[in-house]
Image 1: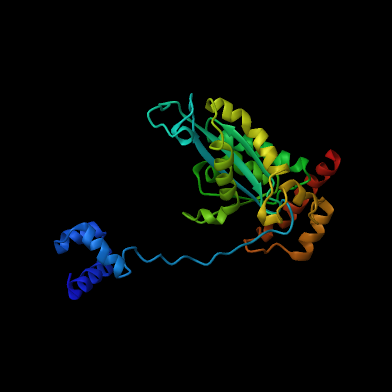
Image 2: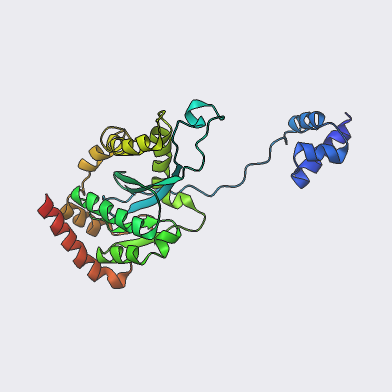
Length: 285
């Protein structure tokens, strides 16, 4: 092929962004020939888009920020193609189930439950049990981050629960799941190491194994972001795990660690209700 025609093909590709097949139709050349020309010209693949800078943050004390999200999984009555590789056998019209999860920003300690829906009542009841579970581990929640799902932003009982416990509700920017990245990453691990790791006989067997996997995640599985330690070990060695130590740390470092702080007008009422929660935590210990 003449050099001027190769240059014209590459220029057309850069200017229009057409695929090699569309470009081949335009220049009346075989697709394989156009692909070879584009590869020699270094334009067979589109330029990677500009990505925003990665901003990493970690709150200094457990409970200063919790991340919450939901992951949907399909139900099945026999193993599917994901683990068997056989697409001829499928469980049709079985339904869906939802894994609700909350992860602590500092220690990566996680709590998950699986339910048949993600309705407002289910979300509120799960959140209450999760907050009690974290409180039993000495973690008093101060902020809770969710995405903009309907069951989070239009759920009155959810708002009342967070207000009663003096917890600020933070929401991610629309279409920006990386803001809530810690629970998003946890759900990737959940999917890879729990949902699709074994060949379960049915979704009921998979559901029954979730509490055991969550306990393994918290107590045995190492996490590279916290020094290759399990979340429970990292939490036990954190300087702010006790309510009094965490309170001293909050006073020393303030509330700005890359995320917006709570409303100043509500600080007094939040402090009063939070102290009540810490007193409850001491009594439980």
